[in-house]
Structure formats: C-alpha cells, structure tokens
Image (cartoon, rainbow, N blue to C red; front, side, top):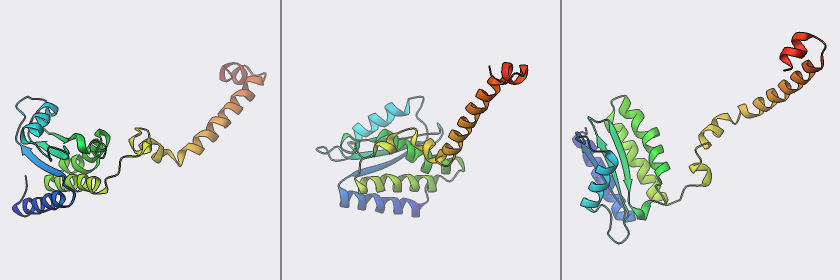
Length: 176
C-alpha cells in the first residue's frame, strides 16, 4: 500500500511522536481478516503486541484490512479520554475513508496518522458539542433554522386564518 518514501516518512513521524509524548502509534496493514470481526482482531493484536507503555496504556493501533475493506482505530485506556470512539470514527469518516474510496491509500493513511497525532499532541478531551451527534446537523442548519421557524409561524397563521373562513375548501379541508 505504501511507497518506500511514505514508509520512511511514517516511521519518522511515529518515532518523533513516541519521543515527544511517550504515546505509541502502530500502523498495521493486512490483506484479510479471514472472516474474523475487525473489532476482535484489532483488540487481540493490540494486546498481543503490547502497543504503548505498560504503565500508561497509551497506545493506538491503526488497522487496515485491504481486501475486507475495513479499518479500525483501537485505543489504549490511557488515551481513551483524548481519542474517544467518536473522534476515532470521525477520523476514519472524514480523513481516511474518502481517500480510500478514490484508491489513494497513501493519502488516507497519512491523513489518518496526522489526525491521530494532532489529537495526541493536543491532549484535549472532546467538548460536549464535539461528542454530540447532532452537532454536524446543527452546524449545517445554522442558516436554515431561522428560515424554518419563520415558515412554521407563517404556516400556523395561515392555517388558523383558513380555518376561520366560510369557504368549504379553505376552512374545511385546509383548516383541518
């Protein structure tokens, strides 16, 4: 999946991350899971390899199963407050998978590693708004929300007016 230059770049990036923060990030690419669920495989591999320091449990496994078209970010307990399941899912959904869909695996892997690294280096826990599944909807609909409320108000007024008319269609049918 990776060119020699990209492998060297990733090795250097991961080495610096471990030196600077103590956190260990492992990138694993496999051909297939052989029918095993990726969650189970990632957990077993994470524990078997002992990713991260034993005392702090500050490791992250970035697993890619190429033929199965599955990917997972497994996080040690020491970093779970920083890289939550929600953040890991957003990294995959916004950084990794779009690049994989276009066949650019190198870019997807590099983007995923950079996003994980930025969260680890930042060390900030997610805010309530970031972890809220409606936050994406609300950020998109910020401009439409006032329009929606105005339309609802106008509709209620018109329905009330139509209900008071003596016309069968306006008062009876539309008012109902």
